[in-house]
Length: 506
Image (cartoon, rainbow, N blue to C red; front, top):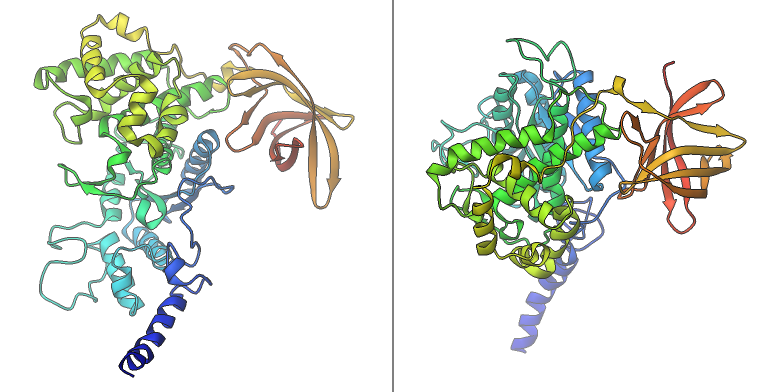
């Protein structure tokens, strides 16, 4: 009888626990990876998506600046592959920042993506007020704060605390300064980059104090942050530690110098590469990668007396030997050693989950940390011209200095004189097989390998293999020119669906 009573008392609780669905998505909490997020119930970290990144900008950021930012983050996603990604840009105006903070908090609460969500979710007004303080203090209301202490969930001293949007607003107040934080949240299942405003695209904001910052700098920033996103999406471990700089990090994400250095080096290289392909056409300057890296090496040599026995894996934020700078040259050294400038994202990172970060490093580059440090110290003692010999000879080109052969659509055939696919050139023909209200579809007809065009000639189009997108800037249809994008729907039958067609100005 005693056991029957116990069973009668606890069985309803057990049944409730097994059927409880806090977010109402149809998946019980016991089997829901994100029990407070109605938009997902499985761990989809590392999975590619079809959608482009979402950009959220404060109301005081002009359309020109917003459009320039969106173009850059979309280009990064096309090139490296699309992952779920948000970009939040904060301008200069306080009221505009508060409007953006309101949208941020609504989104995080709707998805249960605040670390204090579970403890505060019974009072949504209070929860949002706490979030607004965390995001926009000292400009947000403190009506939720009902005690006299300065402590909260996110700071022990509100009197000195600034919300993250307020921090980026202040950066935006001091152009040409700019900053961003990639914002990976593995345990909450989202990535939201936090950034100051993109001001380079609008003449009304890219002015003052004699500066004229070229658009490529925003592209480098976008590619840098997205490179962090790509790396993070390859690391499934949720284990976190607080490092010596008081940052919460995932150990399998690796040393700061390798993450920041690779993001610096690959973003600078890739934007120049896409410029030489005629794909990136934002304003830039005559600044070869070799000259950029010469300056970085000069900086290293000036820092070395302060850390003559440095170990690359120990260089962290705030170190007298800057991890960004040392890491750039470390990345150049390692990628040249294996003959693949894409080795970090194509070879190294995909091995981390199986081998650990250190194991993947050793397997990819054939070096232990001890061996790398020994080789790298020796490399830093070489003459500068010998060091620069490992850097690709690549620079920006201007849109007016390039020539592109147009694709031609005639007799239901789209003929493309040159397509770049994985850095190789092809001539490609596609056949129009459907032109209905439900869509326009082309099918692969033929392809022949060709020599890559050399400057000033650039490819007629580029195929982004990681997302199956074929972009063609100039398609001649009779006397008119169009820019079109085609999406590969199915690799097995090689059918491309028309995504967009925009008439070019003559």
